[in-house]
Image (cartoon, rainbow, N blue to C red; front, side):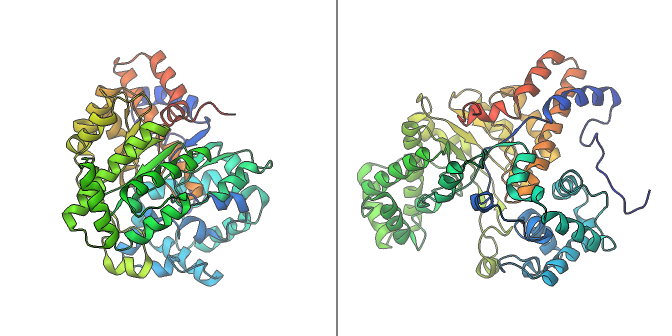
Length: 475
């Protein structure tokens, strides 16, 4: 076999021990063809509404994927050369970006990014070649040719990937017209739903906070000149999203604080924020109060509240000024769920309609905080590893960290959290293989009956996220 030939091994990620691997194989077979439920991600719904062919391999694999870009940038590649914040690249620039990936391909060995892309090359595009400078042009040409074919357009791939539900991430003032158009299109049978993401409207320290809340009020038809108006506008827009298919709200502040203020203090600080005179500590206090308001609204309207805090956004000022947000310069920090969520959980944690899913990239809190919280509060679920830790080893560590406290039924189901559309099946397949590996180990050690493991893999990939995110049964 040529050194340039490559096909992913059918037993990838399964246990090395032959006896345990055999159990894992049998479990994986029960999971691998189940539909995909993706309750949190960042794919633009217009991709499926317009159903235009993907432009080229670079715009599909490289430009939108900060997982890929950040490592190349760390090795000295200019993000502009990868198409970040540049608009569509011409053919010459696109091919050059592809060659940059090929030149740095060895640096991705052992990373989930390489694992996902090799899965895509093989399983989606039928390639049997390893990417390197010798093969880059031929691989580019073959992918580019296939992207012109009807079976590689977004809707066809959506069906090929067996995506049952795809959630997007949306601004509270969005009119959700692409979602409505997709829902009304009889030729599209998939389910694409919005997610309410209000972060920037809950951050009084932002210089543009007055303009943001004014826009929120305009979209809701409510005067947001007062705190009470802000609360009513949030209630109105959340219901608008729910009526247009949303099942969850998504929140990502620097901490998950939910301490409530006295109502008069909240009103006073909101006015100060509108006037641009709020102090730094006061802005933090008001932001935590506004997040607590979201929890109360969730208890009213039933949107599942997902929390993934503790990320220092836009760590490089220079890169933010040049390229904007979401280009890989977001860095994890430590999180404290126990103390920060206590006010919220004492307020609505036992409310019948309230539900929250806790995510982290601070792995220390999985067994110490998240599992004990989700193991006692009926409203709390442990979110799967995501972002920096949606990788094989981290997912296996997650299962080992929380399962003794939670089992499997108090977890969210896998979250792909991706902008890279073709990586969705690769990511979900990875999670299914790791779950099969973990369960096979328990069976082999006689800590779990094979029958129980079989029952779990029959429900984990699809049924579990359906239940946690209140998606209902498929149409």
